[in-house]
Amino acid sequence: STQGYSSAASDVYKRQVKAFANYHPAVLLLYFLSVLLVGMFVTNPVLQLTMLLGAVLFCLMLPHRSGGAGFYVPMFLLVAVTNPLFSHNGVTPLFYLNGNPVTLEAFVYGAAIAVMVVGVMLWCACYSAVMTSDKFLCLFGRVIPKLALVLSMALRFIPMFKRQMHKVNRAQKAMGLYGSKSLVDKGRSALRVFLTMISWSLENAIDTAASMKARGYGLPGRSRFALFRFRAADAALAAVSVLLLGLTLAGTAAGATVFYYYPRISALPLSPFSVAVYAAFGLLSFLPFVIEAKEALVWKYYISKM
Image (cartoon, rainbow, N blue to C red; front, side):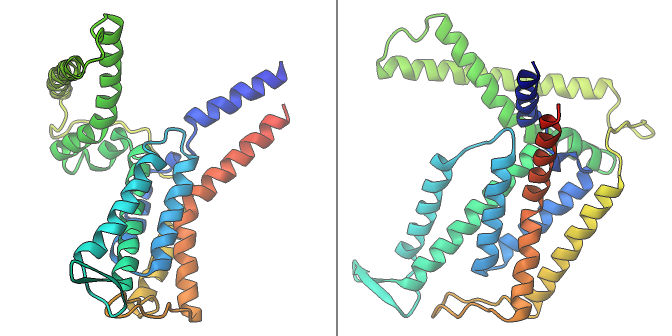
């Protein structure tokens, strides 16, 4: 039926289609470097929160999500609480712990560091989901072929390792090797899975290296084929990214986003130029979400017309 076809088509879209990932690898790399450059080196809380929110929205739009609140929330709390315990700078003590002041500035700065760390981790997760090994090889396979091959193998190794470990674990359970619930039996089973995965990893690396050598990878004069073509949409996204990044960096260099945590928390810059910088970086951070949301709305519209 039409309703069943629409539901199936919608499920296919959720699992496979990633509109932002369809852009040229060079544009994607430029975009991720732009966001991470500002998020990692600018200490303004508005920009850091914007980076975190953009990463969260982008992660929610991806078909395959890695991690979740169960990992990132404890990570956020750990980083935020750890800083006041080791850093006692600031002029506003809240209480004393073992004779050392725990200051408001240290708490706020710890929360800012946590926002930055979690935001960068989420953007890296988005990067690993979008920038696949074939895209990385397309960018750097001609310039640094050996290093590009090693890095692409490393990027795809972790998800492959997790999937294979899950398969080995299920296979051993089906063979009845988890008959006991004791800690000793669980430890032996985990060790057996780990040793199996070590052997699989070495064999996989050797097979990949032998396969690439047999194909003449890295040899001078070897022809290359790539599925990626630079289109007008890629040029538009690259231009918008460079423009927004340039405005953000110009505002940062001009002091429009200066914010201090020590010795006293400074006032948040809210001049018209500062607001323009916040808006520019906000648009830059939300670009993937906007693109994915627009594509999803267009898809649902065409599905509703069937």
